[in-house]
Image (cartoon, rainbow, N blue to C red; front, side, top):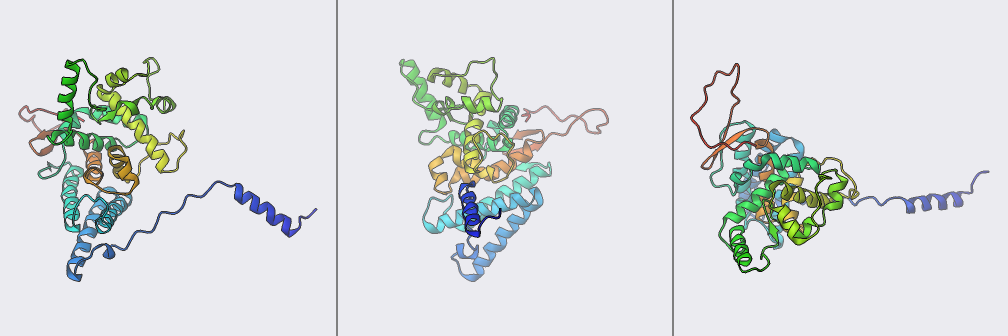
Amino acid sequence: MRLAPRVLGLLVAALLLGALPVPPRPPSSPNLRDLLPYPPGKREALVVRHLANKASLHLLFGEKAARAYDRLLRLELANQQSGKRSAFATAEEALEAAHRFLLAIGQAVRKAPVNLEGLPIAPRHVLPHAREIRAAAHALGLPPAVLAAIVDNEQHGGDKALGLSRGVREVADGVALTLGEAPFSRTLGLAQMSWEDALKQEARLRRFGAWDPLRPFPHTEAEARRALLEPYLNLLFTASRLRGYFNALLSLPPEDTRPLEDPWLYYLGPAWHNYPLRAQNLETWDDSFNGFFKGLLYQAVLEGRWTLQGRRLLPLKPLGPGSLESPSPPVPHLFP
């Protein structure tokens, strides 16, 4: 029996209403020139510089990385115009910072000595823990360089003796423990992970098969603090919390365990780890802006072996049968 057109229409409408919602399309990017309130000559010079940066990233890492950079730069410029929190006061400063990072990234990709002079980056905190960074990131299906950028941000910030930096917190905690009181800080370790958040990660870590079943999971503040002082566990809890953010941001089910690889994660990771409320408000600031470029730099660095001398990263070439090179004089080595 054929259904009447009206009945058929009602059935189709019911099916459509019961279907899963389609995620809204992201808003179109604002016109770049509209984000540059300068005289025509200066504006066009800045556009050329931005396109040169974008082309460089396209050559180094491909189209997705170039698009991610373009998206970040437009977000930074939009924030400068709207009065939201931004990493820089002017477009020139933002483009110059991006250019300096890209010079170092290009050197790292070519396995040439990397000049870090003037860059807000602290690889001395990252490279000694490269193995743990890779293991923790892979356990949660994340690019290792996302975790590396977070560690760099947190430890570079801790190197500054300003406000409640890592150093000040550690001194305050030491005094509190001496007096028999609770430690002052709520975040600990390489990635400055909070003990409260660490206690919330059990279900996800077990879902990913990332937690050693023979090891009891921490359930108290004291147990969480002890765990977070172990570099690998600190990174594992951080990666788990980050994966929860990413699944939500990418509209993935909480139980989704597929590997994530988009270069935009190099912005999202440092931003959401450092200051979720700012990230949710689409603000940009030092850690989120610089974190993106740190992620790209560590993507290249973590693939090789390097030694740090002052503000220069030097590649270590493999020595062995068939090598024509003689060993260099002994220097302190950091092996990713």
